Amino acid sequence: RTAPPVTTYIPPSTLPKPTGVAALSAPAQTVLTGLEAIGLLLAGDLEAGVLHALAALDPKVQLEVVTKFSEVDLTTINKKSGFLAGIVRRYAGQQATGYAQQLTYVMAGVHATLTPAAQAKLNDMMALGTISAT
Image (tube, rainbow, N blue to C red; front, side, top):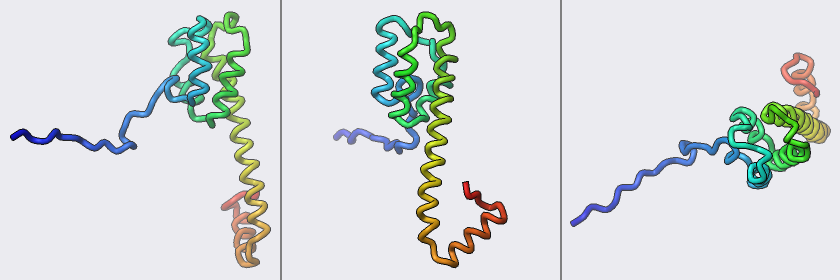
């Protein structure tokens, strides 16, 4: 008799997360690998930290960032990683502002439907500085 094969369950949270270009959305990966394929981008041109920051953005924003990056004449850019980092920072700021505006709009709508007691409590919290109206 042979024993059944031993399998080990590895919870998804403990599996290694993709890094580098592999951590990006598929469309963003396609743009960057295309740039590599035509020789405008070399392996190692983009630092891990920049790719990590890019991967933290919404997938649609990732594609916008790499598209913007690919539209410049990369042959004139010596520090491609730094150039991409600048674009990532600009888009990350816009994304954060957009989320804040969206939250403000949602809060404004919720604020109008609160009971008087809840409204009073919310006003007290804003007065104490516990929460901000903006």
